[in-house]
Amino acid sequence: MSTAMNFGSKSFKPRPPDKGSFPLDHFGECKAFKETFMKCLKDNSFDNSKCRLQSKEYLECRMDNQLMTKEPLEKLGFRDLMDPPPSQADKDTKP
Image 1: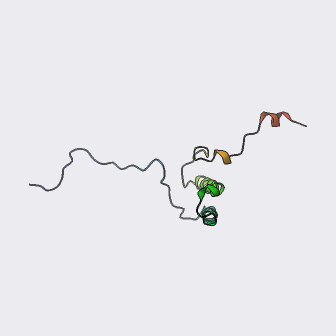
Image 2: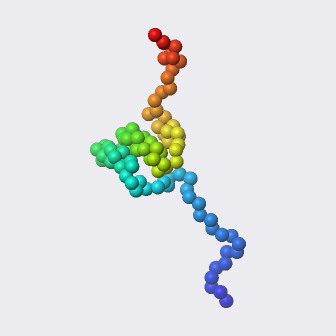
Image 3: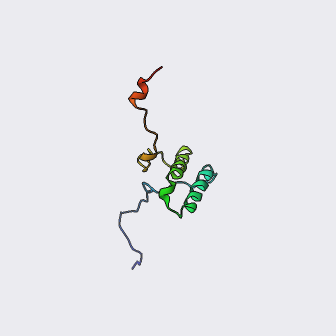
């Protein structure tokens, strides 16, 4: 009699999570951005709402260096920190 459990033909196939997992910055490509963000958090009693600009810059660095998947910043919650597109009125005012 075997004491091993047999689960039949079903096999577990692990897959990476959709979000929340990305490579470590082994070469320190975004270290300065991380340090700025961490200092901001410390200076503001770890209230991340006061460090959104630093957070945005850190995530942009990670995306630019392929340390995380490129995502639109609006999708990451930074719509209010985005540069507004030039308005039509700005285009019409030519000297």
